[in-house]
Image 1 (cartoon, rainbow, N blue to C red):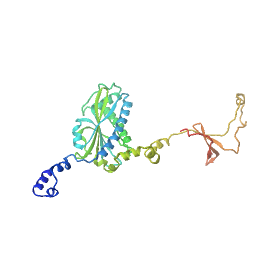
Image 2 (spheres, rainbow, N blue to C red; image 1 turned 120 degrees about the vertical axis):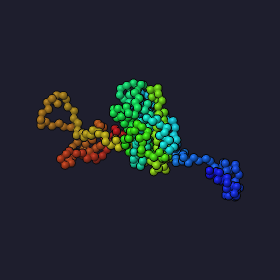
Image 3 (cartoon, helix red, strand yellow; image 1 turned 30 degrees about the horizontal axis):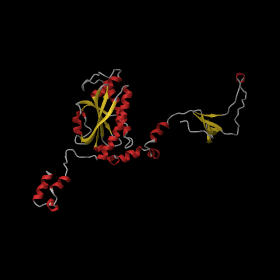
Image 4 (cartoon, one colour; image 1 turned 45 degrees about the vertical axis):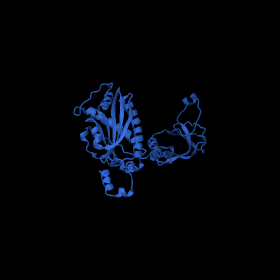
Length: 330
């Protein structure tokens, strides 16, 4: 329609005739555009999302393999942008769909795994071989199977959050499990979305895993969807100077309990001396009463301290570091 109207303008001596452009030049400049499939994501943004989801596929491979105790491989297949309604139409009518809140962003995203892959894994989780699972229809899924499917969804959401951590810190939320495509109401069918598809190789079968990311959900972080931001966030320098790297290690490590002891002195006694010890006996140690004591962490002497009291409790004040103590043992 647009090109036809431009042709009419040429006949009438319109703008195209004034510029004097040839038909060949117009053909080189103009390109077809399908308004049903608008390009919401740039090529760079799509490449960045693909890099993120390459990581997601590796994480899911490790998780499924460990949980099912089997060789399961998740391989990236394709990434396309399309209306969410078309993504839904490409799915099987009966499948496992987890609609997840995208907090702290608004909106939702979808992680989907076809019923065949889900039941193979569920069969292994219930002690079976995983090779000939029961494939139920939507109304025959038992409460136990639904609970196990929810567990699989939690694994997928956890790996999704891990893969995206360099771009945005999604909060851990449990996906709303749906077994029929028509039950999804949280995302508009006209929403332009990125559809990422994987091939899942398990028990001599090839199944499907997919993710749908609506454009409105990713809108607040569109400017961060670039290879420059992704790789700079993952570099060692950014991990030293930012919160993306060491915070994830420091937070859990800060809660680890370690034994701490203060050495009041040492003495060498014979077995006979120890056997003869009585209440009131005095043992002379090698510790000078005016010298600092040693504080050990995990049996490694690290600090010089002074004994004292803090309220009703015994305490030790750090006054220095033990010379040649070496690196911390943790």
